[in-house]
Amino acid sequence: MRVSTDVLVIGTGGAGLRAAIELDSRGQRVLLLGKRPKADAHTVLAAGGINAALGTLDPQDTWQIHAADTLKEGRYLGDAEAVELLCREAPNAIAELVEYGVPFAREADGRLSQRYFGAHRYRRTCFVGDYTGQAIIEGLVREVDRRQIPIMERVYVTDLLTAEGRVNGALGFQLEDGQEVIIHAGAVILAAGGHIHIYQRSSSRRRENTGDGMTLAFSVGASLADMELVQFHPSGMVWPTELEGTLVTEAVRGEGGRLLNSAGERFMARYDAERMELSTRDRVALANYTEIMAGRGTQHGGVWLDVSHLPAEVIHSRLPRMYAQFAAVGVDITKEPMEIAPTAHYSMGGLRVTPRTHATEVPGLYAAGEVTAGVHGANRLGGNSLAEILIFGRIAGEHAHEYAKTQPVLPLDESLIAAKRAALAQLRTLDGATQRELIAALQWAVWQGVGVVRTAEDLEHALRRLAEIRAQAEASETGYGDLPAALDLRSMLLTAEATVRSALLRTESRGAHQRADYPETDPAWQRSIVVLPQRTAAGTNTGMSLTTAELPEPSAEVAAALDEAEFEVAGRLLE
Image (cartoon, rainbow, N blue to C red):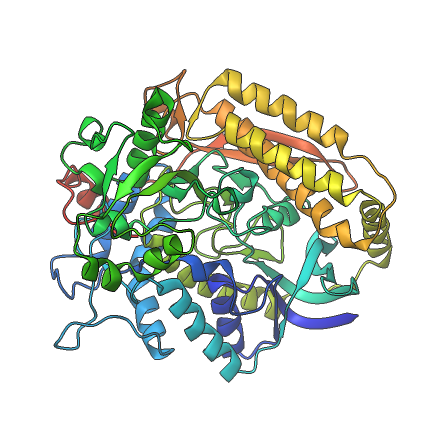
């Protein structure tokens, strides 16, 4: 099957849908393409809210203060230009969602409700119960359907296509029957999510967030940044095994949940006596990890999160999803505690893009959402990611439109397509059971080597294991059904190696990157680590190299807000 379009958008989550709406509004032909059905992207798992300094409940809030909060809690590794763009445009994103029919909670007088999230100075988080991401996706899908924007579902993109150094399409196959799909496009936007599935315990659904978007772009010459900066959510399920890593929303702690170790001690007093369970994600995750590693964990290697002291009606009304989630495995959270532990949750690193355009270094290739780096630094504030996907999805759509409108569309390189087909044919011969076993081995190696706390010894061991796993990915005869596993492993090997090498290079502790052998924060490391593809003259990748890059300074008005930002964190931490 061959299809042509002005702009191809890969990924049907919030960033991809918003990019497609922008392109259609500018009169451009756009095609959306996703591995899952259009209303079932990873965005639906975002529970708690979306940030914007509207000042509806706290009139003194401003976008500059929002930016200062984001930079400070990102431990000053966020790109100030990207952060300021995010915070300045966030109110417009909320207004758009209201137009799309997203039913945000409102006060009695009709104003949008806003609540506190951890480390935000003011209430700036808009929400729809405990299913904000799902409500946003539903609103975006309605708008996409109203505009009759075409969507191809259940397509796995295997390669980006290029001509004369410019991206001009993509190659993939339909997951249902293996039929080849070739898309010819004037520009491509990647909105394909992160890479946290490289971890044995993650909040991602199975076979999502394998780093395939990052791998697609890296393979044609784009660079990665901040790959060592992976956010570990403090609370993921640990039992039963099949649900290990499933997210337990921070709204549980926001409503008064207490963290207890196996001795029944409310241990957060040792780690953040002022904010206790309402501290930031990196601090609470590290505290949970420390208790477990000190032998004060539960039977299944977690800690307890308890809301049984709250009235049952509060739990049913405020935490209905969590009540149902645990009731399904025989735990009544109105009477007994939840067993939780840190889980890999969000890729704060990713593709390196220019903030004002969201273009990669490769002409014709744009990216938005969790697949990119820049905004979150070393610790993501809850509520910022939903704003990010909408704002930068729109910006990527705007600038991909300008590129496709002004640049001639190059013909497809048939010899390149033939070479990609041959490579896929070789992957089809890989034994699927072996590939799945190797994926599990990779996830365990990454979890052990580059988890909540890292050391040079553990990181170097993880690198050796990745090399062994790569060598073990040998061919044996089987059929089409195993190709997705082989492709997942390919992407996970690349992004895992980039993560481990970056973590080795950053010899300090900062935010979510904690080195037991370098426990202090080093001011000299207020820099971004960049992963560059090593390429032959013919454009073939042969490996990766690492360098560092300076970060832009904040504007004068945000710098002034930062000067005031050694503040007492107000409010409550909600997911």
